[in-house]
Image 1 (cartoon, rainbow, N blue to C red):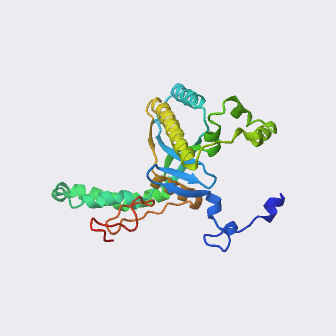
Image 2: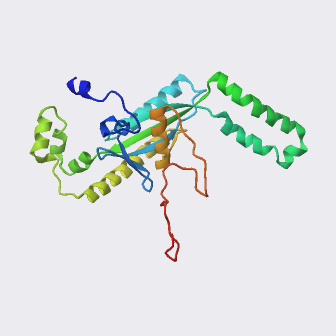
Length: 262
């Protein structure tokens, strides 16, 4: 309570001191575009999977129960923690109708006026219909972290398990259960290896569920999820100067040619 009363009550994007800045809330240190990971300020590495669920709109109660039991079995077989994140994002009619707008100039549409009329109705009616209904797109993601502590304790055997005990666990950590001779680079490499193992395990379990699939989320996609989580909306960046439409770029800002010129 004392710490809460002394904490900053207002945070902004730009402030004189780090305590008043909003970046301390997200706890994001940086994105790793090559590995498609997020590094937190506490050293944790986080990866994500996007899950495509089975279509159960016409399923019976028995089918619902069967898929729920199967999903529970997948989760119970895992030996690590994860977080299931569900979002409901409003449909953006303009992005959907853009495809119809391009179809107006197609030869088959030009030759068949009725098709053009249908496309124009879609362009005019879809946005208003989606807005009136509040239509949303439901997305499901699984977030999988690996902490530095987990890597340090990986080869400690039974002693590592005791670190989670109340009171006693703190004493064991102080006595050196978390001590390691690993360098920073070695810890990072082992974190990435462990993340790959966990990702494969979850991917395999999800794909074993009938009608379900999973794919890895890029660092660019992770940044979009974080923005949407904290701000409630997602910004779309248009391509410019030959660049792709992305937030997290792996291409250097300054590049050189074979002659060494920049």
